Length: 383
Ligand code: EPS
Image (tube, rainbow, N blue to C red):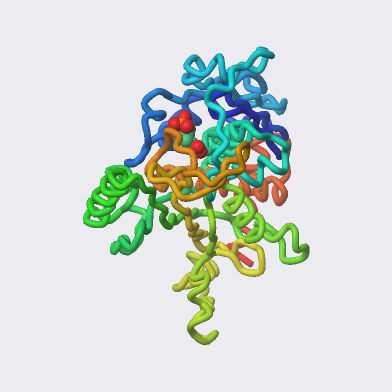
């Protein structure tokens, strides 16, 4: 499976082509749009989210609510394009550069991208680097999540901390409701309220806020990924997908960096077996991955998201046209996108898992895959 995305933040539309999906997967816009809506939510977003109501159009590869096996083309129009048509129109050779950006924002793609791609209007860089692009990674990831759900795999994402405000509640799958009820997707109501206040303060200060996200999946078959080939190890592929998401600066699986602070006897998860559960662990420091393969326990991934680089109280920079010192450009932006990032990361990790599922269980049709997963689950229990 693979996909390509295209589209600028203020261009006409966002596009994705997904190739390699099995046929007979039940799929409709109702499987994708709720994820797009979740991605738009979260306290701390800017005015752009009031302009957009992202809804996907499925342009190919699906008939009567099922995939045919053909490439699936997806489109999400940018409603804001009508306000940018003079600036972003791909057809117009007299494009007005009235929103040209020359004062490179520290932490954004602007300066390195301008040098690399040879642009002095840094809008030509930022329009694609924008996190608007994650819309299509959510749309494609939502398809992966549907495949996973059809073989009994469930995911969840939530905010663990923002600034020094940390969720104090022990994780539970029943927390989903608390997460959905929280303005910032944090399962701890008290931490959630403090984070909302911190976002308000940051907005007043012209500042931005990052945070730590946690994403979990349960019900994964044992042995997705590989211990034999470095580039097929699932932890590496998950880390690449997570780090390939805008603003992510760190990724951790299971106890991650904390495993370095205690000896091995306190790190590794003892193995038990009974007839009902088969092999299992009572701890999960490994976060569901050993040697690049799923081990049947919950997959636990954490990611660190840096604060958004567009600051209303800007940092010093250089104007790439005048080459004089300047304050970095101010653009309409979000105070934080941490809550949305959890949704995005669940989708991009879901994609990697669905890919690994297809590698292991093959099959041109979804019913074939489902049957093979079911047989393999029986085999795993008896092994
Ligand atoms: C973004 C800036 C803001 C965000 C945008 C990412 O958009 P605008 O410049 O139109 O105000 O809202 O995120 C999205 C549009 C989105 O859908 O996530 C940036 O510069 O990266």
